[in-house]
Length: 366
Image (cartoon, rainbow, N blue to C red):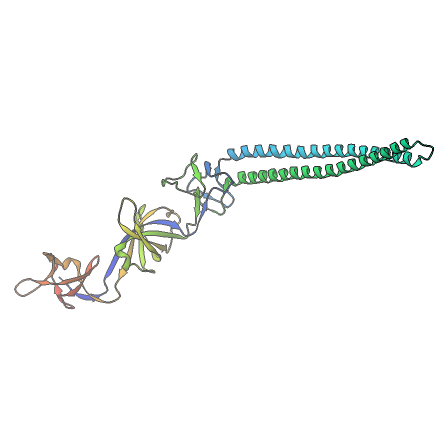
């Protein structure tokens, strides 16, 4: 026998979840020009503890190494061309300077010959001396212009070669930096957790990854969270700050405690195969077990729910049904009798009674 009593009905919502770290550093392929696909050559063992500065992954460098060899050869050829151009320009200018000196001497000689000619020199010869001096002067001007043009041309050639040198040098530096960046270094101490590919499988050595893929991550196991999916029908009963219990599928005997710290704003289908509409929530874990807990572990979550006001409560076992109508059995002098009741909210062990019973009224148990 039991009796109807006033109290707060305790209920719970069962949800599924997955452990994540509140602080995870994801290691992705570097951004390298003209490279979109990378091959994983080496990975630190998953679950291993690494220190800051340790190598955790090595991506294939063969393509960049080949490109580096080509660019280095081009840069060395450009440096050689610069030296060759400097020697050629110097030689050409030296030849032009000698030609200019010779032209100046010829001009001075022709001019002197014309200046020294007097009335004793035939008029036709004097005209010839004058023309020779003019031709010699034009030659001096021509060679002077050639020197100026050669200087300008030399500067332009050197500028072009210096531009090539700067370009190839920058590309060589970038490729060397890129090759170095293909060695992924742990930015902090922690445990190695492999990333997943587009099919949800763990990334492994020899596999190709792409820009934006997380090759691995280093989570902080001291600050763990639970990402949960909660059925749409329970949305109105789930609130921020509600306490909950967490049981890992890998170790269901141990109970962890936490509370809801974030509620999703969007409803979605659980997946393509299951049309169930759910929303997401995030819960904290009061005391994480760093020896047991790992990101990606699945868990069952029980969210405790209590109504704000007292209700008339009765043991769930005391309620019977007939043709959809709830009733209870009351004790009497001449045997038991049926009493129709109206059921409110149903909890795990108790149910709230809206009508049909009074506080303290005794009811028979089966």
